[in-house]
Picture 1 (cartoon, rainbow, N blue to C red):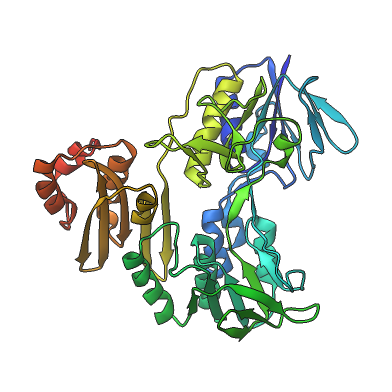
Picture 2: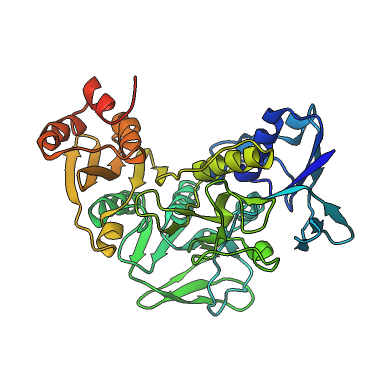
Length: 420
């Protein structure tokens, strides 16, 4: 009997597991090793639970009992100490497990800055469910959130809904700097400020004040009191296990994989936040630490681990959130990202009754979009960016009218490769 081992139980690991189960090979044993409890939960639901808007059980998408009819061996609360690639074994603390093929789905980890006071009680990251539970149990009335990316903004919103006084710090000159251009970011900032969140931009946090326990935050130009601090600076691939086992690591710190999600080591695959993939337009190494990408990569890794041929062709970024009832979406590239590459995209931006739409076109190709409450055109804009729809000069004017109309006609869906 063959044995396939999966390390990690996030969406990439579960997606790989589902692909193995779908293959229905009775002669294959599957072992899942995870430091967590194994059940699949959705980080997208974190803000709602943190805000007290629904119970903890609603975070879960799959429980271990959902796999009871399949030959899956779970090693939960178990840390992998190392890999022996030559002899194909996974080393645990007190034993080792042989494998025929291995899938690494070790995910990402929160970036923790080296600043005075970082070890104080009351300093939290927000990556795993256990982190969320700790924040939910925290007492106090004032919170400082360091980092105004998606996680930081959502945490700020959730705690504000629960009546906390919220200070949001960002070293760059706008909120959601990786997802929005400045004009759209200013609209989001206005939403946050209107709800009572204090936003501090272009502010590097220098120190977390307090002796043993958090008392506040000192930045370059401001100082605020705080009972807790949430670090939301960003995430990085958790690739140390692969690195110290001799598996090739890419220039951005993720595990190198080919389009089959196979690593530099034979019979070892990797997927999700721990890997580097290729930019779908420019072919450059990129990190895509997003749920839907991890899910797609997990499926590909699982299929190839079962010797079913499948390839990952890349996904453009799509990020979404809802802030105080306002829907925000980012698809593909921002103007800042393209400008850094020396490119000059054409930009269409329109105000609509409920929000705004910003569309980016480069070489007649739809390459990016940012939406505030324009949910009706989200599907075809995402399809247009993902599938590289070309809009020639003659059609741009016509396309512009359709894109910014309240209800785009059927032809624009067809032009953008979406079949209704």
